Length: 311
Image (cartoon, helix red, strand yellow):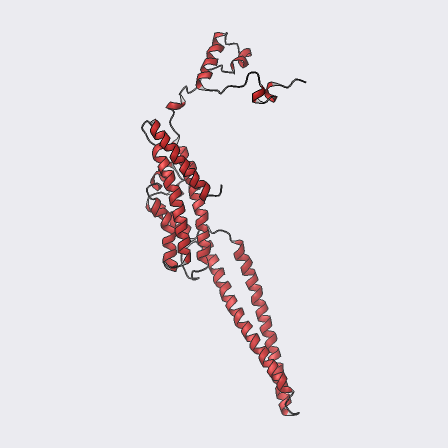
């Protein structure tokens, strides 16, 4: 069986396909009309039975800046939120239960961590009491072997009985506490992100201050004007979580270093994107020189994305 043209490799075809361009479409349409415009023969003219809807050369087309804005900026922003949620998870480990910042989910996590730490402290106290009780039992058991028969024996036996009862109660208390610790550990381990922590909320506060009100749109989506305004507040936006952590834990805490790294990463990404946007969103003609510059900036931006964002 002879294979069809489509089953052959491009290099093996006698008449390999040519790229379809506005020029080839216009040529094929003209040939179609010259040969009588017979629809039955349309395939001979690559189905170019009508003129192009928008016969505009690619060199004269406008770059769809709005679509680029609404595709790229939310992508970076969502990645920034993910890394900032990790900051909130760490922050929850260090703040007081009465911190009073963040949303319901964050405060619930802080409460669980506070309860866990308190329960562990109580368990450690019980453990120390158990050790002390065991020492007293050992001492009285040895003392029982040295005392003479009579009142002293009864007294020591009574003390040993009370210590044994106290020891069993302490063991029961510790088992209850350990069960509570295991449950709290499991509940906390299930929390791998907090969407309403104070660090995440700090971004929204900055956006609101600069009149970027996403809640007015379906799903809290960004619109073109939002992206335009956000490009002017990149340092303020990316540094917001760090300010929250410094306020809560002080400037010397290790988490401040991590927040600084996150801010630096997304400042780099957003600034690189802003440089690309400066050219492709221009309302004037883009020269060849500027196009080359845009290509270079896009390469720099994509390199930063590959380095810092898990695709």
